Length: 445
Image 1 (spheres, rainbow, N blue to C red):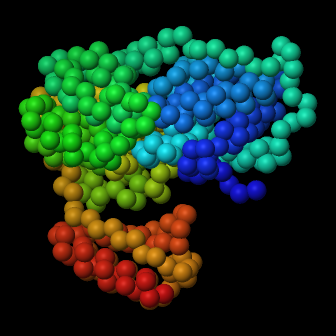
Image 2 (cartoon, rainbow, N blue to C red):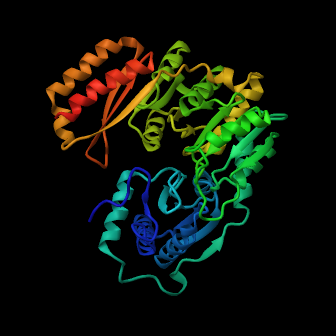
Image 3 (tube, rainbow, N blue to C red):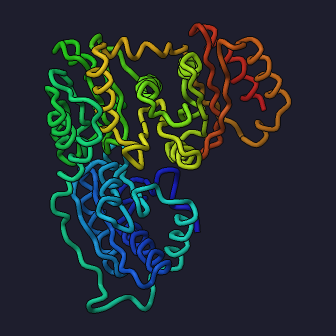
């Protein structure tokens, strides 16, 4: 049996790769694994989704699979992925399930699972669920009163909103924010959260119809938001993706503030309040060198992980740290969340503005982003590239040329015969020249 779980759950083209039958089977397998671990406990699962049309179908399949295996289900409806993670912990459920493909276009969908406590499912538990799914449906399925019950979780949205409000460092009175909700899961809850915190809110792309999620809007299409922020004279803009686990910002001048800058701002705020554990943040290998230089200047250590918010989370948990994130805007605040939460991130960014009295552009300027070039090089054998003496020599020469003012990174794709060449340098032209030279050597292997 092939692997169904990727780095962020099960994902694919809805009703083609990701079918109702697969959703039913994965959900049933997850419930059977939980029961196998604790036969005396009747498991409870929280199920939520983003507004994709296919989510209605897949939610029905997941709920049926869980109940048929003997798990009780609490449906929370359309809510951000981090809200489901929070509710899994807050409602003391054994499992959280989200139907979402995050920033992917509408035809795609996905199944994300959270373990008890709202944390991402551990690899060993994923492997058990895959094995249980491969083994097929159990013959001795529960009957009668042992069949799982399904009900809507009353007050789930208000629970999440109250949690966000309690995690706010500073009232946002007078701050004007324009929020792009990507026609996604944040369309109702994000504007309401920011209003409750005291901000004046203008909403964009907050009318989901099941088909328009991420369609030219949101954190992967931020151009519209930048124009609105400038035209409206707002203090800032916030861009979410379809499931609102990430957040990018736009300053009053229309300049994009990325995850590296947000991470640096929040690290400095926590440091000044004595809340940055071990005086350390976690970032991935794709974070700009400008972040590392800014943190070094502030006396903050940076732990670097592989790309993916689950690796950031692993490092935070393993080391007992408080803050980590990715350039894409997945930011994790361990004092208030168990996963990346775009709404919490936006509130913390606005809190930095409100508490300091400084505009976002000034706060974000702590990171001077170095020009970055990323080339995707098709290869016939990633392993041969990794073992190549010619490639190693080209990379070493590039590192010598860049010195302390730049860096080079080669990263093989996890799913394709592709090697990514990333170069940062003081100028765009130098970055492009160095990247092209190394890419040519990679391509020749």
